[in-house]
Length: 126
Image (cartoon, rainbow, N blue to C red; front, side, top):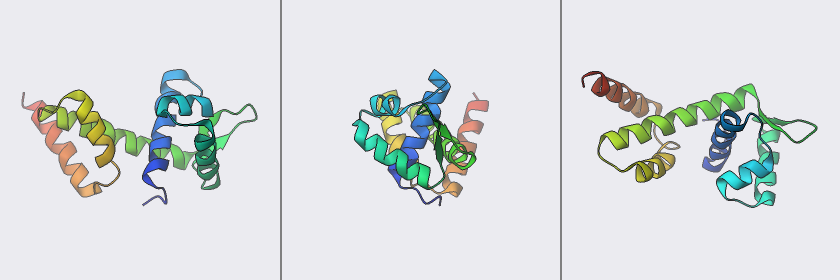
């Protein structure tokens, strides 16, 4: 779809979340959040930069490009909606979030749209 593996999408989603939470993001923030080594994060940032998903400022701040932000927002929306749908079905919050993280990368746009629509209708009928 976007030429990224699941891990690349997870990095973009994490950058988006950290940006919302902290305002600016550096590799060390990503390493801490994802519980990964700094060298692993540095390699991943190099790949994301090469593919045009991020830019890195002179002081090391990681910035999402337009394409990176678009991808991160898509993955983050899927994560939120799928977590909410699983919780709605009775799954505990922690398990729902973990399962949503696995599902968000593989689910088709058609299926995701149906889940999103059904969840919205279910919430509106309460």
